[in-house]
Length: 186
Length: 179
Image (tube, one colour):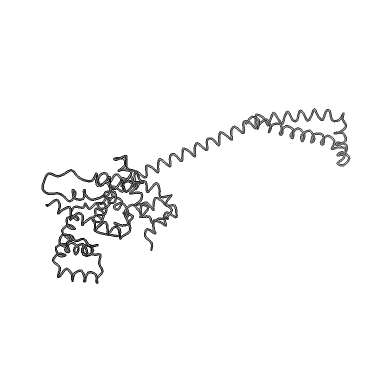
């Protein structure tokens, strides 16, 4: 429904306003521009409107600051970034050093545990093996094993076989006990 | 060659410092102008530009190229400016852009000048925030619709419409103040 109070001149202005602004902004193609120019040649209302837009355009251009930042801004920013990077690098270096120290402390602790438990464990194991071998001849078990080995390898091997059996048994028992003690200590 | 291809190459290679060195002269002024169009204070805009570009630097390793680099940088800029504005006016929420616009627009109405003449700045103050921002950026960017649209993250047509309406409104305001 049309508005009975509407001013036909205003309607005309509204219809052309956007195109006049586009013309001012250089946003029309050649054909559209020719069409607008042809209309402008005969329309005093649009001529006045365009003049008003041009005046506003000039005022806004003059009033808008031409803002730009210079190389000094870049230098300030980059130095701030370098400072952040250096802080990050320092933090990273500190973390790596801390991790290295923790690893060294861990290794050192394990070595101490090993020395504290493995050596006495092996010695105790050998002592136990000697005690066992002292008892085993009476039981006949080792005698059977050694005599069987001596039969295979010759009579001279009896002493070596006994020593080998003591070392094997002592080492095995000692290491098992030492590992158990070491893990219990952890 | 796509825009900022050289920067993307550096980013893919993990050469963030080189990428930033290329990016800085390309976007520094655009970020500054967008900040100024929102904050309307040169010193404040400069400080915020510095903060924004620092944020960009810190976030570069996480930039996944899903959006254009320019869009990503302008989004960070807008968030920085909104955060700055919110510091000044703590009630503004990031999700309340419409309310925000109207509140800022309401705030933007300048003190009435007793003199007969009204400056362009005072007229601009009376525009809604979106209009004012579009006008400010458009003229700062040498009347480039494309750059204004890119900075605002709006379609070209929307920016044109905003500018047309803003200038019509400015002419109306000029008439009203001269009557």
